[in-house]
Amino acid sequence: MGRSGQVGTALAQRVGQWTTPSRSEFDLSTMTRETARRLVEITGPAAIINCAAFTAVDRAEDEVELANTINGKAVGILAEIAAEARIPLVTYSTDYVFDGQGSRPYVETSEPNPINSYGRSKLIGERLALNANPKTLVIRTSWVISGTHPNFVETMVRLVSEGRSLNVVNDQQGCPTIADDLAIATLEALERSTHGILHLTNQGVTTWFDLARAAVDGAGLDPTLISPCATADYPTPAPRPGYSVLASERLEEIGMALLPPWRDSLPALIEQLASGHR
Image (cartoon, rainbow, N blue to C red; front, side):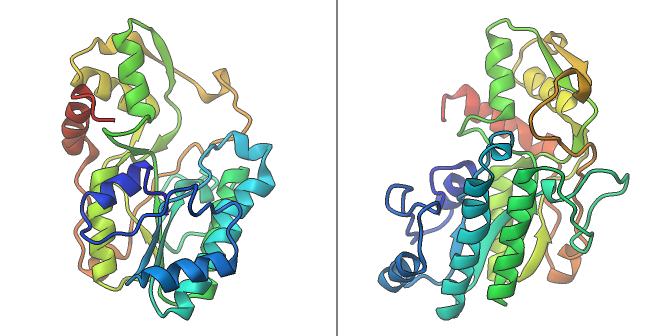
């Protein structure tokens, strides 16, 4: 599910036999157990990887029920159907399940405390899925970017290329995650029969401002067109955690390496954008 998104696209490029129903074929907002069960019976998958989600963080404040259905209830149903078929479910969650009040990276055992509706909806999905299927793998990630879809980096590069001067928040800290790197790590974790919660992000803590400047500079544009500002200068309907850095205490035990530093993977992403591959 979610084949047309950033992570779904990156996964599809790396998986041979991959059944990827479109949203029109399989909509999580209206999915029932019967429709999910029928799809699994028809396709006979070795695993279900759910890349679909309600990702409009601010809109989730007004559309709480829809966000909870897509990010919560539907994920629980997928886990139940996967359990019936005795196969794993992989689903993605977010750094926004944490309140951002700390100053140390959040690991898999850190206590969630979401401060917005989006984060709460993703936490509902986590818990339903983990309770329904012992083979569930919940991958928490953050600040996902790619060279194939509209996202924060694409927006920054596009606007600055048009000569726009931008103010970008410099007091929210997190870890960018390149979709290609996340896809590779996801498939490795699945191959290793990993279950439970796993944090996967690229290495390196930054702010949205520093990420924007790095992207613009990497695209050969003028980074001085990006200026720092505070979160308070641009209030949004949904509050954001100020510090949502994710780290993993499980990768070593699983036998997996850390994802590359985001600065090392950014040039390939910028090159994709420059080639017009969206």
